[in-house]
Picture 1 (cartoon, rainbow, N blue to C red):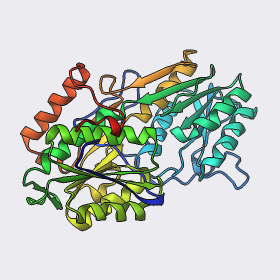
Picture 2: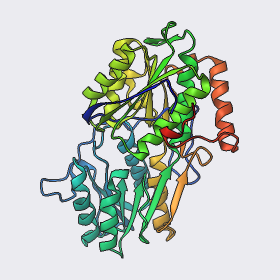
Picture 3: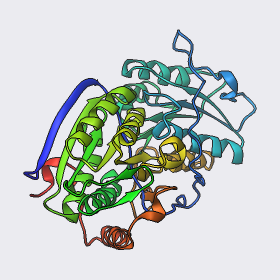
Length: 388
């Protein structure tokens, strides 16, 4: 790990973050189009017994549809403006284009995943032909559920479950994170002002706020660290894990500590916790980088400090899995990996600030994108593998 990295765990039980961006991104072939606008608050919640429900117009599963999908979201729920909302975009796009009904469940805790998965798997009225499990924290529960229901098809995002009835979709988060890390590393070494933010000419420091510390979120961290170091080896990098994906207050506190310690740009991979990072950026007059969706659009109140977002096409994975199931081609038992080359991840510049970025910075980031796709630049997947 680079000698100039201050890597700490800030608060146990709070926080979660996001991904940042470079150029407009079209979906993978056959995937949904994403206008980045689905950041509304979710209102559909399961009842107290843990039974999936489709209240408030979000559920449409019935026996007449060609396919019914049961959706189990990650903790943090809908309205996060990033990960879960991106998954819902793919689900809704598929429902609009195909004869698909669906119901949605929003677990509050990891311990609820198995119950929701099982409820969908054992339902016969309606019958759910596909159960979608969003997030790596569902893997343990799904490993058992899929074994108990061998005739039920499942898909999971962000983890691999090695059962013959599970299609696993993962992303090269480290590749997209490298690009936004390079962006942050280049900007902190120069005077730059745009929107409500500016860099401190006396500081060369950037920060990363993670949600729950895990191998997955460390891929975001590793890419960001490597990108910042690629921009300038002397950049100081502060890293904090909050311990939660739905704690904006803790995210704000963590990011403020970084800004007060000289950080010009903070990147989050922390779900709704990242909203607090944006609040801190505005308060400090600095910059932030979002994740999963173009958060300058899904969190427009903070577009004046969001330089970019590392977009992760969870919507494409959800959409493609539904289409594949309808066509009898769901890749159960297989892993589908989506990186920069497959347009599964991308760096997307902020809607308000993107045009203000220096051309030499954006050109350097684009060169790195091409080098990664071409195999000339290899990005580490663990912070411990980031060279000094």
